Image (tube, rainbow, N blue to C red; front, top):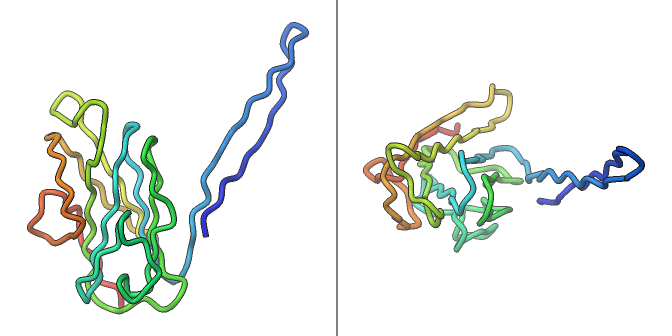
Length: 160
């Protein structure tokens, strides 16, 4: 389950009081999870394809049979993430393919203004694994599936 934490700070400066609201997103967690953040504001999307070739993404959030009970708990359309997919039940074993879609950015990625996607993979009793890919062509590719032949592909993880 995802929720926002809000903190309100008061700063007194020259007899004025400023209220600063700081927000942090707390994402869902479970036995197995994959999160992504990206380097500049816009609508980036995580897509994970399960070992049985079921895709989890903004249009198929789960949890359901169609997502192998995995679920996307937050679709960030304006900032730098995170987007998070997790299983709060036992996840199917096998290879998961992980992709990042550049859905909508005010300036498409290019050589001088790339977008870097950083993924964190969390597994029980294991060190968090990090995968990173920098995108330099602004193609808006949204196949909403993922495999190792796609431009959107970042990596794969074997969940045992």
